[in-house]
Image (cartoon, rainbow, N blue to C red; front, top):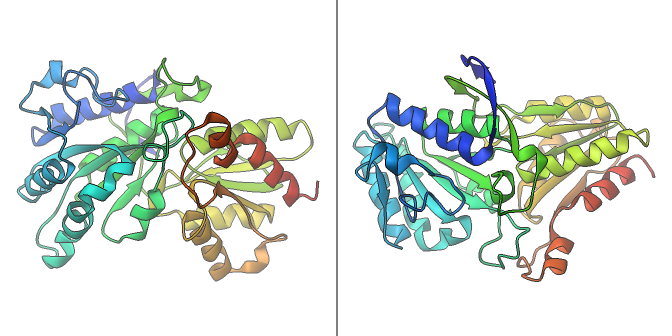
Length: 341
């Protein structure tokens, strides 16, 4: 992490992200925001609260319910030198606008021989745990990571959300910025003690593609991201009292991925559990396991453990939903299996 910040405050993730956007809008008049309910409503997960009052409707643009239309407009603006931040309200809605995202946003730079840049940030809410049902509860970051041409960042805490948003806005490539509802720190959602934390003041930037190690350990490595970082840290704290020392790797970015950080940790511990709130098959957990195998499978003392969503739609019923999500209970079971307990 790089920063020129001075001082820190405690903010929730939503406010830290909005502050980063506002700072970049003040710094660069080409930055603007558009999407559904980003104006007076302030974003349904408080992702744009207060920006309309500060910058006006010409730079904070409420759109009709037409993802194809407004994401396409943002792509056009980006190719002409603007730096749009465009919000896809729920990642689950990607199907109606995937042609714009993948056949245009992600490919224009390549198809133009590098002559046309698309400095666009596509923000979107992800994740389950709130009985939002099968069409509002997915993560799908593995889907976006699988398609070349886009950077994909997934913060887990307020400081990283602010720093990654700043980096994303300044990046000349399209960046998909995915935030879990459970890390926003909103009063009307399930309380999460780590969704409010210290955030540096000033010009705070987190490098895209650099993982963090929020907890060091010597026995088992947990590689994860987003809300699952919070669950992994809770499990690590609990298991420390049982004599199991867990190291937690927060990827922060999937594209690019900090493979070396994963290898370094697993080389030390010899045991790996991958926790992913996306679907298990053909996704992030398999990719990480493959990178370990390609590097040197002998650094593993036991087979890789995976805690992910099974390949079925996210249930609406709360008890069923928490059966499929990567809960602390499932994570703890996987870690104990790694050490033969």
